[in-house]
Image 1 (cartoon, rainbow, N blue to C red):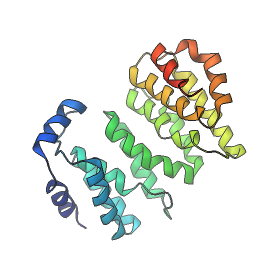
Image 2 (image 1 turned 90 degrees about the vertical axis):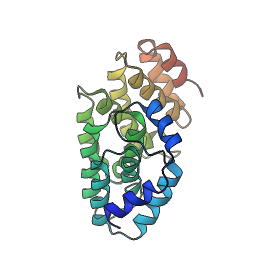
Image 3 (image 1 turned 120 degrees about the horizontal axis):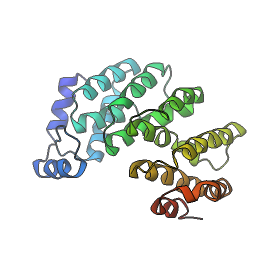
Length: 224
């Protein structure tokens, strides 16, 4: 699968009316083709089946560089897989995308792919921790979104619990940040965590909840 052929397959599903709505909704200044996420996911699954890991990385890299909305989502979908052998190149590419984030949609798909690589090798959290002090809000936000897998385990290991505490420390450091997207990300992390670890969620809110915006505090405790 060449990048040109992949782009042709995406463009073949373009919907100008949906594209116009996407421009207004996402607001980030790039080309939108109006292709739905399920359609992109299906295309990426087909391409992935015919490519080895280096081939997927190369195709994802090229698609990302087009700066077309749907192509960037397709790039992330190409690399969204739980088990990948020799995934250093995959992680390196996903991490290289983070400074390009300028909206939640593409960022969240990329973080979904990246979160699986963190679960595969939690030592990569050392790199992610560096994002928490970035001057770029989207980079700071990514540190929470990409670590969401640790909110979901029903039977966490001691290492998993330590990682939860580590990320909650990052969230505490963000609590005074008034940016809506940062507050929303804190709330998202806590809300998901509350389904599996209500004790840690309550403890965070008791200590730091007053520093959150009211909407974030309410969202974080939604399931408590």
